[in-house]
Amino acid sequence: MKKYLLIIFVCVSLPALAAKKALDCDNPRNTLDINDCAALTLTSAQEELSKYLTASVEHNKDDPALVKAIEQAQKDWQVYMKAQCNAVYTQWRDGTIRNVMALDCKTQLTKERTHDVWMHFLTYMDSTPPVLPEPSKYFKM
Image 1 (cartoon, rainbow, N blue to C red):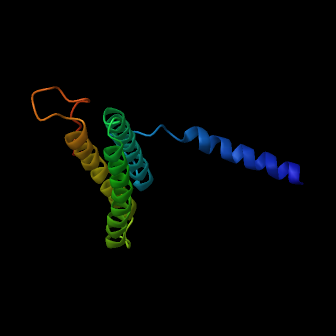
Image 2 (cartoon, rainbow, N blue to C red; image 1 turned 90 degrees about the horizontal axis):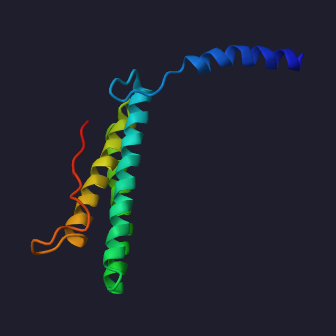
Image 3 (cartoon, rainbow, N blue to C red; image 1 turned 90 degrees about the vertical axis):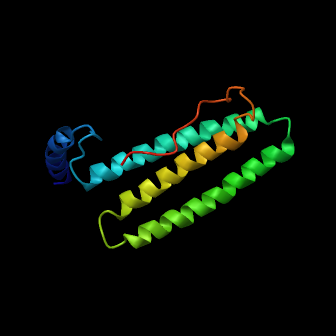
């Protein structure tokens, strides 16, 4: 009996899996797609921030006090970002939009943080080119 149930389950599940289309973030079809696209955007922003933080630490490695301060600022920023975006989630808690609003909050703050790291730790006061190109501090919704 278990064998037959397993066969039925597989036969019913396979067409459903095959019917699932690739995620098209230019044309999301439903709330789940919108949330998945927002999560991808956040992941991309987090990867960029990581790149700029790594570069700022490397660029300033001869100043251990500054490196320690950058690392502490990042930890403090993460606490702020979590609290701020949790508040945004709470504001929208009764709607299906709550997840995308919180994800967009995290993305926006992450992009702003990346720009701040670039501006303060990867640029020069004179016309010397920056260590990395200027990141965008805004994202499109």
